[in-house]
Image (tube, rainbow, N blue to C red; front, side, top):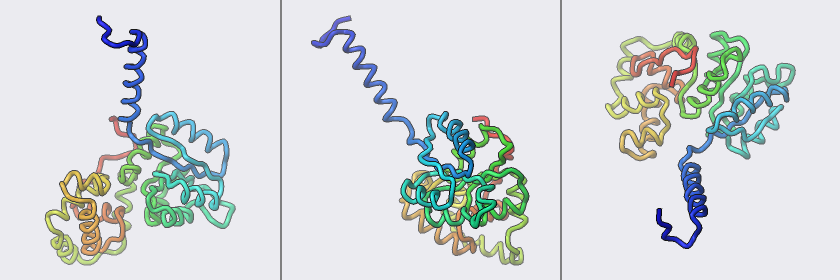
Length: 258
């Protein structure tokens, strides 16, 4: 092979390899930035090791108390907050209380709650306070990782039985005819947006899928919330499943195979 440059051949090979590495780094997905909240140092260290073993995830902070958690969440703006619900059982603020405070203080973050024993009441409380998902501490590591990925993408992470419970426990519904009338007020475009929200797409992804601007997506969501009487994306997803505007996902007791 001819060397048309003034560099030694070994130097050219090294240069090409460096460029290839740089290209891979630049093309890599932006890592998911995660905040861990748990009272126990050893437990947090274990979560960090498991999470940072994933190349697309990075733990940007750990917190053992509510003040520390809110400070890090406000300054670092994490993508996902992993919160142990057993947090603060002996303190003034419990893990359940902290969910709502974190959502208000860091609206761009998604809260994923961890629990030791799930009940329908617990799932409903977590969802109502604004958490995007609930994972059992008895689940596999793969389930936790998949839940972080899905929650980060804007999709709610609850297993099928929990979704069914949330549907059955939703606030008392008006007569069926009145509910049908609400749904009928949606335009075809708004129905499309509802379907994509239920699939877990973020506003930017919806805009790209529908070839519209993000601002237009926001306007559609405001109109949908008003017409259907829901207050956030999670309530919209639950409503969509209940009114058959979207298909309920398969059970998530086990992680997806992909």
